[in-house]
Amino acid sequence: MKAIVLGGSKGIGKAIADSLSSIGCDVVATSRKEIDTANLSSVKRFIKKQKQTDILVLNTGGPPPKQFSEVTEKEWQKYHNQLFLGFCLLLQKLKVRDGGYIFVITSGVIKEPNPRLIISSAYRLAFTAVFKLASKELAARKVSCVNIAPGLINTDRVRDLGNAVDMAKNIPMKRLGEPREIGDFVKGIIENKIKYLSGVTIPFDGANSNFVV
Image (cartoon, rainbow, N blue to C red; front, side, top):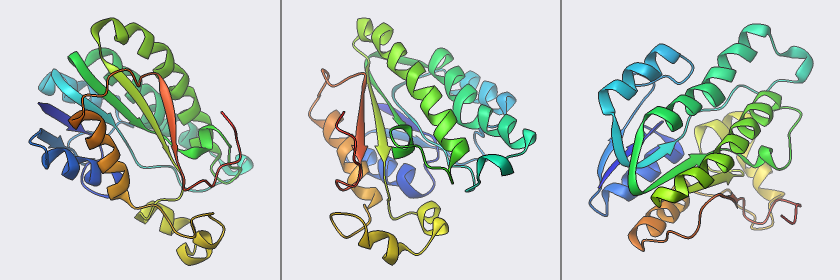
């Protein structure tokens, strides 16, 4: 099976790419050099080059922490493309073969918005709504759609937000999640041919969230 993993050069994306490679998938793990979802021309070139796949993982880095009053118009536009419109084009135009899988890596902020992560809270939630509705259409071709919403995972991105040791103290499991755990979760779904899990959001946060559903 062919797998395309966006943002596959580091962090969660690399962990997913490594896990899929371990079960024999032919993995295209991209960096921003191959595709920059903030640049729609880059997205369109990538779609023309790749055309189709069996597994698609939509993943990209997050915006810098900022309060609402600090966000510039230029930043709204950039991340509108990077976190929303670029993903929409990929979801529409890059064909996932019948019986395939689409995963999107969003964030726990889609359930519990964070005032320091206002851009991510807005656009990741917007794409989650699109992905939920698209999953219904894609189900007719037996394409399963799973949204993974990580909490505090041991990546450069999270470490940039603050002291990892201090952050871990407030998590019920008293540690950050590891990227490999998300990679192995994705691998397990594909390796075991789990198809009926679709149109769902999976919080991956060590019991840190407070919402029920």
